[in-house]
Length: 158
Length: 161
Image (cartoon, rainbow over all chains, first blue to last red; front, side, top):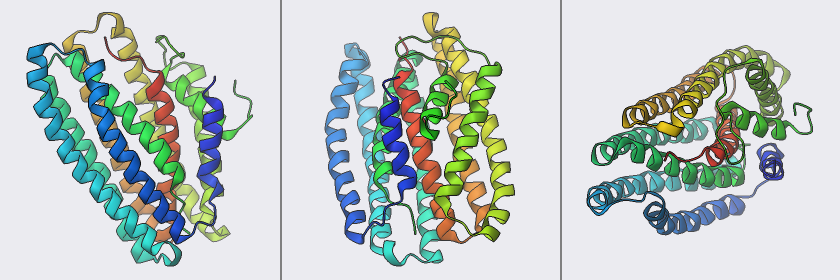
C-alpha cells in the first residue's frame, strides 16, 4: 500500500487543472526532453542487466533493439513537436487547434503500439518468446513510468 | 479497501486488484465478485473525475453523458479482458513455455490496440456533441488516469522468468 501516496499526488494533478501559462507548458516540453535523453541512456543498461542474454542472443537482440529505438525516437520527436505546438497555442487554443493536436496525438499512439508489436515480434523470433515477453514487460514499465510523470505535468486544455 | 478515502486511491487499488497481484508475488485471480466490484468502483470514480475535470455546461453534460456511459461499458469489457490475461499469465507463470509467452504477447498487443481504437472512436463521437477543446481535455484526462493505473499495474507484475 505504499503506492497510495504517489497515486494521491498524481491523481490530484489530473483534476487540479492549474492556470498554466505558456511558459509553464513550454517548461514541461523542456523537462520532457531532459527525461527522454536520460531514459534513452539508461534503458540499454536496464535491458543488459535484466534480460540475461547469452552471447548468441546478444548478437541477435541488440541490432533489433537499436533499430527499434531509432524508430521510437522518431515517434518521441513527433510527440515533442506536438507538445511544443500545444504549448505555443495553449492560451488561445481553438477547436481547430484542438482537433489537429488530438489527431496527431492519437496517430502517434497508434503508430507506437504498431511499432512496439512489430519489434517485439522480431525479438520473439530472435530470442525465446519468454525473453521477448520479459523485454515487452520491461519496456512497458519504463513507458508507463514516463507517462505517469509526463502526463501528470501537462496542463489540461482550457 | 473500498472506502472512498480518495478517488485515486480507489483507482490505484482497483488497478492492482484487476491484476490480482501483491507487492511481490503473483497470485491467480478470477473474475469474481470482488474483481467486478472493483471494476465498478474504478469506473464510478473515473466518471466523477471526468465530469469534474471537463467542466462542461449542463447542456454539454446531457449530451456527453450517454455517450460516455457507452464508452465506459466498452472499457469495462477491456478491463475484464485485462484481468483474464493476467490470470493466464499467473497460471502459466511458474512453468511458462515459449508458446504460452507468445500467446500472452499476442493477446496483450491486441488489447492495447483495441483500447487505442476505442479512444479514437469515442473521440470522434464526442466531437459531435461537445467542443473539440473539451474532447482534447477528455483524452488528456483519460490518458492521465490510464498512465497512473497502468504504471501501478506494470510495476507490481513480476517479470517473466
